[in-house]
Image: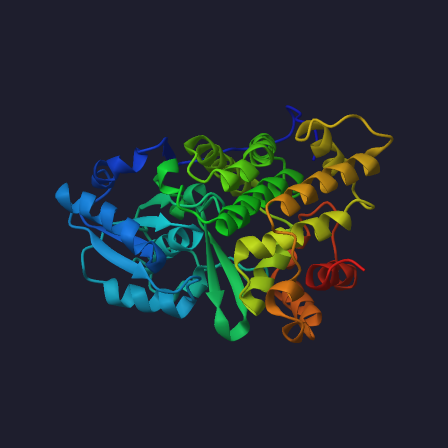
Length: 401
């Protein structure tokens, strides 16, 4: 990170209108009508009961809504392309993503797939190849998150899974910035503790990585990222302990939005470069994979680049001045690890999937990172290669020795 200077070029763009507050989703029909007459309503099968309430709300308002129940928790490219094939010709003119990050990403992917000629994977922006350019307009997207974590409600990103290569890729297109994000804490009170913890830590990682990312000057990302981290430190444990509290839920929703705004303008670094292929190889949920990867990455960052983490100790944790930057960086990581332990996320890959499935995983994971995720590695304060990743990956899989 560097101090803001007038001579440094920077930019900020967020074309998403944010409508927040408990009960905000009650206005979904009027919001939808601003962008089209026939919305596609994408929701995960796990939220069928809750989705039914809002589908009926749309119907009662005279909206010709088309429901789409998402059966795959992390949609594959074949699933997305198949869904688009079945939906073409129905006159859909806007897409609503209702649910967690996966449902919102699915909505964004369909907004592209329903308007473009090629399969959805061709529009993923990969480290080893650029995406195809979009031709013409894509469908407008409205997001209604029911979790506090991914920030997909305010980002131009959609994560895709390609099973044959055990790979995840991300569409990065300004065209899929949601037109409106409806942030309603009342929709989030039913989140179980484990999901609250993992999505909350995913939001923290977005904020952290966007703040320490060295790829470009983005003072807004740092401001939003630091505030998001403060909110997670102050509210995540309470949101788990008092799940029906609208105050803690709304604060976590705000943290997620701020973190999403931060990564929209600077992107993620090594933790996500590890967590995405880890999820593709093991099917560990994304938020959990990010959580268990964060501290090992930071521990191995301190020696080479402690200054940015030391700054977070002083500004986010409001910690006292210590003897040097390394001590302050260590104190910040210790504080983060304490939070992870407090919300029950201090796990290893071995403890999640078992010892047998971890055999050889370290080398397969490193190979996948170096093939498909080398670009985020360059955005971290310390650039890790295959050799320097090895002890980090081993800590993630088996724990520190």
